[in-house]
View 1: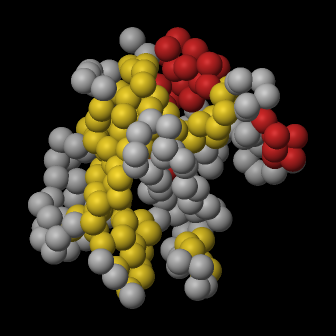
View 2: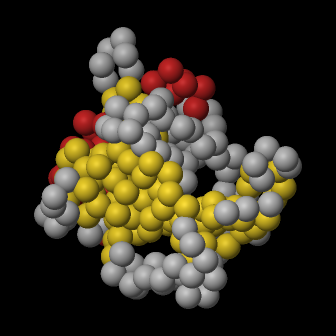
Length: 213
């Protein structure tokens, strides 16, 4: 099995060496969590953890994400399809079942997002800074059109929020590498960098809608 890192992506490239598909069973499908140790670490399938090239992030505010995105959707990851582009780089097509459109021209109840990296055959690639979508995840995605016309995530991992539901209160919370925290870990995150507080789904939607036309 091969593992590696990639920094680029040709979103509109055609598949060369086959493809790999991972599909869920519905909007209520169980979620598979992919841990993220930080922008400087990559987990090689549990075998070892080692630092990779430094990636600098300029932290975007929620208002900047909302302003710069061409579309913002709330939905669930239904399927992942890994392919190679014309230069042989692995990328993943993420199929989203759209529950709500906060901004943009997305219609029809679904959309496809392209993300760098993925697992194709015996080769696994983690593209530094790219969001890792998993089948069953409930997400909010801030999207822009890539060079090839495909939807890509704005600000790399900053433009994807994972949604978690509190069964006791019924509230939904959102978080990613820079914003928010699940309610039960919110207090512990207050002293961490970057400083974050729990962010509810309704607050994220409100702040997005206040900026988005």
